Length: 220
Image 1 (cartoon, rainbow, N blue to C red):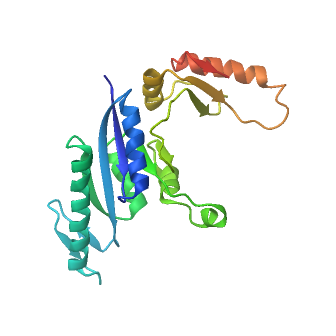
Image 2 (spheres, rainbow, N blue to C red):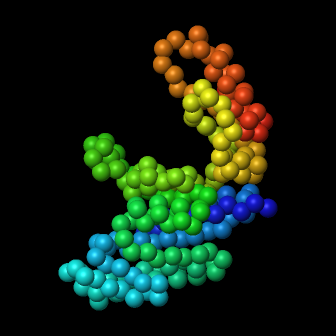
Image 3 (cartoon, rainbow, N blue to C red):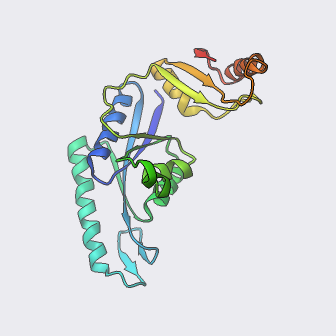
Protein backbone atom coordinates (compact mmCIF):
# COMPACT_ATOMS: atom_id res chain seq x y z
CA UNK A 1 0.00 0.00 0.00
CA UNK A 2 1.22 3.49 -0.80
CA UNK A 3 2.23 5.65 2.16
CA UNK A 4 1.13 9.24 2.68
CA UNK A 5 3.81 11.20 4.52
CA UNK A 6 1.99 13.84 6.59
CA UNK A 7 3.30 16.77 8.61
CA UNK A 8 1.22 18.20 11.46
CA UNK A 9 2.66 21.47 12.81
CA UNK A 10 1.61 21.72 16.44
CA UNK A 11 1.39 24.43 19.08
CA UNK A 12 -0.24 21.84 21.39
CA UNK A 13 -3.65 23.50 21.02
CA UNK A 14 -7.01 21.83 20.39
CA UNK A 15 -6.71 22.88 16.73
CA UNK A 16 -3.61 20.69 16.42
CA UNK A 17 -5.63 17.83 17.88
CA UNK A 18 -8.30 18.41 15.21
CA UNK A 19 -5.54 18.06 12.60
CA UNK A 20 -4.49 14.71 14.05
CA UNK A 21 -8.08 13.44 14.14
CA UNK A 22 -8.42 14.36 10.47
CA UNK A 23 -5.23 12.47 9.63
CA UNK A 24 -6.52 9.42 11.51
CA UNK A 25 -9.60 9.57 9.30
CA UNK A 26 -7.36 9.49 6.22
CA UNK A 27 -5.46 6.59 7.78
CA UNK A 28 -8.58 4.43 7.51
CA UNK A 29 -8.08 4.49 3.73
CA UNK A 30 -4.41 5.36 3.22
CA UNK A 31 -1.29 4.11 4.97
CA UNK A 32 0.19 7.17 6.71
CA UNK A 33 3.50 8.23 8.22
CA UNK A 34 2.73 10.99 10.73
CA UNK A 35 5.20 13.69 11.77
CA UNK A 36 4.47 16.32 14.43
CA UNK A 37 6.58 19.49 14.29
CA UNK A 38 6.79 22.17 16.96
CA UNK A 39 8.68 25.37 16.16
CA UNK A 40 10.09 27.37 19.05
CA UNK A 41 9.83 30.92 17.72
CA UNK A 42 13.13 32.69 18.40
CA UNK A 43 15.26 35.32 16.61
CA UNK A 44 17.89 34.31 14.06
CA UNK A 45 20.59 34.97 16.67
CA UNK A 46 19.47 31.86 18.58
CA UNK A 47 20.57 28.50 17.16
CA UNK A 48 20.48 24.85 18.16
CA UNK A 49 23.10 22.32 17.07
CA UNK A 50 22.52 18.70 16.06
CA UNK A 51 22.59 17.46 19.67
CA UNK A 52 20.25 20.16 20.99
CA UNK A 53 22.69 22.64 22.50
CA UNK A 54 21.43 26.24 22.45
CA UNK A 55 23.68 29.20 21.63
CA UNK A 56 23.03 32.88 21.00
CA UNK A 57 25.01 35.94 20.03
CA UNK A 58 22.22 38.32 20.92
CA UNK A 59 20.53 39.53 24.10
CA UNK A 60 18.30 36.46 24.46
CA UNK A 61 18.90 34.56 27.70
CA UNK A 62 20.15 31.07 26.80
CA UNK A 63 18.72 29.62 30.02
CA UNK A 64 15.26 30.92 29.11
CA UNK A 65 15.39 29.34 25.66
CA UNK A 66 16.63 26.05 27.14
CA UNK A 67 13.70 26.06 29.58
CA UNK A 68 11.21 26.63 26.74
CA UNK A 69 12.90 23.84 24.79
CA UNK A 70 12.54 21.45 27.75
CA UNK A 71 8.84 22.29 28.06
CA UNK A 72 8.29 21.70 24.33
CA UNK A 73 10.17 18.39 24.46
CA UNK A 74 7.96 17.19 27.33
CA UNK A 75 4.85 18.12 25.37
CA UNK A 76 6.14 16.32 22.27
CA UNK A 77 6.91 13.25 24.38
CA UNK A 78 3.36 13.43 25.73
CA UNK A 79 2.04 13.24 22.15
CA UNK A 80 3.74 9.86 21.80
CA UNK A 81 2.04 8.77 25.01
CA UNK A 82 -1.34 9.94 23.69
CA UNK A 83 -1.07 8.81 20.07
CA UNK A 84 1.42 5.95 20.19
CA UNK A 85 5.12 5.48 19.53
CA UNK A 86 4.57 5.16 15.76
CA UNK A 87 4.27 8.94 15.38
CA UNK A 88 7.40 11.01 14.77
CA UNK A 89 8.12 14.25 16.65
CA UNK A 90 10.45 17.12 15.75
CA UNK A 91 11.52 20.37 17.41
CA UNK A 92 12.99 23.31 15.51
CA UNK A 93 14.00 26.86 16.36
CA UNK A 94 13.28 29.81 14.11
CA UNK A 95 10.46 31.67 12.39
CA UNK A 96 7.38 29.47 12.58
CA UNK A 97 6.04 29.67 9.03
CA UNK A 98 9.45 29.48 7.34
CA UNK A 99 10.52 26.54 9.49
CA UNK A 100 7.34 24.61 8.64
CA UNK A 101 7.66 25.26 4.91
CA UNK A 102 11.37 24.41 4.80
CA UNK A 103 10.95 21.25 6.90
CA UNK A 104 8.04 19.96 4.81
CA UNK A 105 10.04 20.43 1.64
CA UNK A 106 13.34 19.03 2.91
CA UNK A 107 11.65 15.95 4.38
CA UNK A 108 9.59 15.41 1.21
CA UNK A 109 6.20 15.47 2.90
CA UNK A 110 3.13 14.66 0.79
CA UNK A 111 0.75 16.82 2.82
CA UNK A 112 0.76 19.42 5.59
CA UNK A 113 -2.32 19.34 7.84
CA UNK A 114 -2.88 22.37 10.06
CA UNK A 115 -5.57 23.29 12.51
CA UNK A 116 -6.25 27.02 12.46
CA UNK A 117 -8.00 29.39 14.82
CA UNK A 118 -8.87 31.56 11.81
CA UNK A 119 -8.96 35.30 11.37
CA UNK A 120 -11.71 37.34 9.83
CA UNK A 121 -12.38 40.75 8.30
CA UNK A 122 -9.76 43.47 8.56
CA UNK A 123 -7.45 41.40 10.75
CA UNK A 124 -7.26 38.71 8.08
CA UNK A 125 -6.33 41.25 5.38
CA UNK A 126 -3.58 42.80 7.51
CA UNK A 127 -1.85 39.84 9.08
CA UNK A 128 -3.40 36.57 8.01
CA UNK A 129 -2.93 33.37 10.02
CA UNK A 130 0.10 31.11 10.23
CA UNK A 131 -1.79 28.52 8.22
CA UNK A 132 -2.53 30.98 5.43
CA UNK A 133 1.11 32.04 5.32
CA UNK A 134 2.27 28.43 5.09
CA UNK A 135 -0.26 27.71 2.34
CA UNK A 136 0.96 30.70 0.32
CA UNK A 137 4.63 29.77 0.60
CA UNK A 138 4.52 25.98 0.54
CA UNK A 139 5.15 23.83 -2.52
CA UNK A 140 3.60 20.97 -0.50
CA UNK A 141 -0.22 20.81 -0.44
CA UNK A 142 -1.73 22.23 2.76
CA UNK A 143 -5.01 21.04 4.31
CA UNK A 144 -6.42 23.40 6.94
CA UNK A 145 -9.39 22.95 9.25
CA UNK A 146 -10.95 24.88 12.12
CA UNK A 147 -12.96 22.15 13.83
CA UNK A 148 -13.18 18.39 14.36
CA UNK A 149 -13.64 16.81 10.91
CA UNK A 150 -13.03 13.23 11.99
CA UNK A 151 -16.45 12.36 10.54
CA UNK A 152 -15.49 13.59 7.08
CA UNK A 153 -16.40 11.43 4.10
CA UNK A 154 -14.67 12.40 0.86
CA UNK A 155 -17.22 11.96 -1.94
CA UNK A 156 -16.30 14.97 -4.09
CA UNK A 157 -13.05 16.78 -4.93
CA UNK A 158 -12.81 20.12 -6.73
CA UNK A 159 -9.84 20.83 -9.00
CA UNK A 160 -9.70 24.49 -10.02
CA UNK A 161 -7.27 24.92 -12.89
CA UNK A 162 -6.52 26.58 -16.21
CA UNK A 163 -7.09 23.76 -18.70
CA UNK A 164 -6.11 25.78 -21.78
CA UNK A 165 -2.95 23.70 -22.31
CA UNK A 166 -3.65 20.16 -21.11
CA UNK A 167 -0.52 18.33 -19.92
CA UNK A 168 0.43 15.44 -17.67
CA UNK A 169 1.10 16.97 -14.26
CA UNK A 170 2.40 15.90 -10.86
CA UNK A 171 -0.85 14.98 -9.11
CA UNK A 172 0.53 12.25 -6.84
CA UNK A 173 -1.39 13.31 -3.73
CA UNK A 174 -4.66 13.69 -5.63
CA UNK A 175 -4.29 10.22 -7.15
CA UNK A 176 -3.70 8.71 -3.70
CA UNK A 177 -6.93 10.29 -2.46
CA UNK A 178 -8.83 9.23 -5.58
CA UNK A 179 -7.61 5.68 -5.18
CA UNK A 180 -8.47 5.53 -1.48
CA UNK A 181 -11.90 7.21 -1.47
CA UNK A 182 -13.07 6.91 -5.09
CA UNK A 183 -14.72 10.37 -5.11
CA UNK A 184 -16.00 12.27 -8.12
CA UNK A 185 -13.44 14.81 -9.30
CA UNK A 186 -14.98 18.08 -10.49
CA UNK A 187 -12.87 20.02 -13.01
CA UNK A 188 -13.51 23.76 -12.81
CA UNK A 189 -12.14 26.66 -14.82
CA UNK A 190 -13.04 30.26 -14.01
CA UNK A 191 -13.39 32.48 -17.09
CA UNK A 192 -14.51 36.01 -17.89
CA UNK A 193 -16.80 37.08 -20.71
CA UNK A 194 -19.35 34.96 -22.55
CA UNK A 195 -19.05 31.34 -21.48
CA UNK A 196 -21.16 29.95 -24.34
CA UNK A 197 -18.52 30.80 -26.94
CA UNK A 198 -15.69 28.93 -25.24
CA UNK A 199 -17.49 26.26 -23.19
CA UNK A 200 -17.08 23.47 -25.73
CA UNK A 201 -13.36 24.16 -26.17
CA UNK A 202 -12.75 24.23 -22.41
CA UNK A 203 -14.64 20.99 -21.87
CA UNK A 204 -12.61 19.35 -24.64
CA UNK A 205 -9.43 20.51 -22.90
CA UNK A 206 -10.74 19.09 -19.64
CA UNK A 207 -11.33 15.73 -21.32
CA UNK A 208 -7.78 15.77 -22.67
CA UNK A 209 -6.41 16.74 -19.26
CA UNK A 210 -8.28 13.84 -17.65
CA UNK A 211 -6.94 11.39 -20.23
CA UNK A 212 -3.37 12.63 -19.86
CA UNK A 213 -3.55 12.34 -16.08
CA UNK A 214 -5.37 8.99 -15.86
CA UNK A 215 -8.51 10.48 -14.33
CA UNK A 216 -11.61 8.41 -14.99
CA UNK A 217 -14.36 9.52 -12.61
CA UNK A 218 -14.88 13.23 -13.21
CA UNK A 219 -17.30 15.97 -14.21
CA UNK A 220 -16.61 19.17 -16.13
